[in-house]
Image 1 (cartoon, one colour):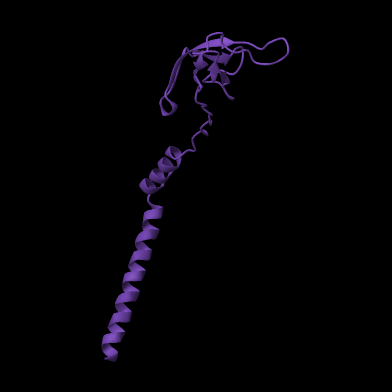
Image 2: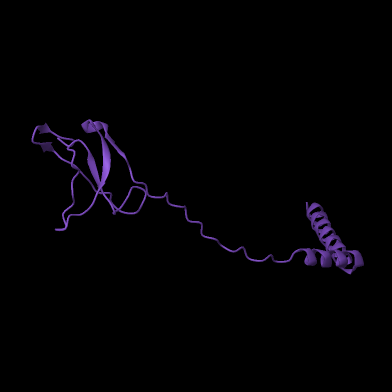
Length: 129
């Protein structure tokens, strides 16, 4: 048993010594040094990539001409209306047409679109009844 352990230790020492000698001999070879130099030359840091913020383009605002709300069974034309001299929003002359505040926020722009219309008229229900 002691003989077996001794031979195992001797084998381990021999392999370790041989591998260390092999590494030392590779470092002293000129080909190895030139290969290391080539590797150092080819591994160069690249320039930093410039970060570019790309913002999605917003759709252009539109002036709608038709209003459709199937849940409340509304389908009507839209016409632009302005503010009255007293600051109130005007309403369309026809009670079956919706009005959109113009100039104002339009669909496609940031903000709320303002629509208005009649609920009833002198003769009965109107667009938003």
